[in-house]
Image (cartoon, rainbow, N blue to C red; front, side):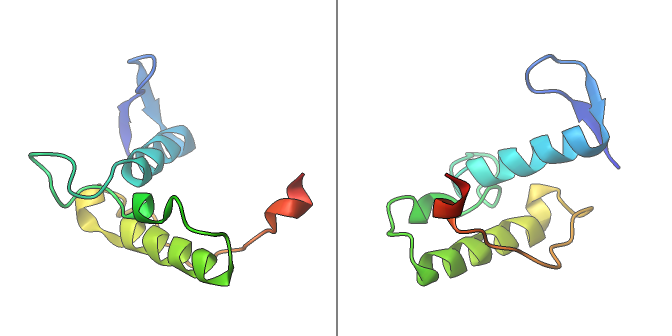
Length: 92
């Protein structure tokens, strides 16, 4: 696992917490929004206002897979093998 700096505390962080931080950063950064790194980020922002239907879930999967496999995002220690969808209404 990689080691880095916690975005909130500035302390050294490693393991799953750092991996979670790196994934969140890559997914929350719109692709093309960083001037020096146009290839960094994801395209999740493109589907923010879509209706939640079977097509939406497929787009989410595609956007996640793109972001996780993009070498510029620095997530080379992550491999998407399986994704499980849970109905939002069941969670409420």
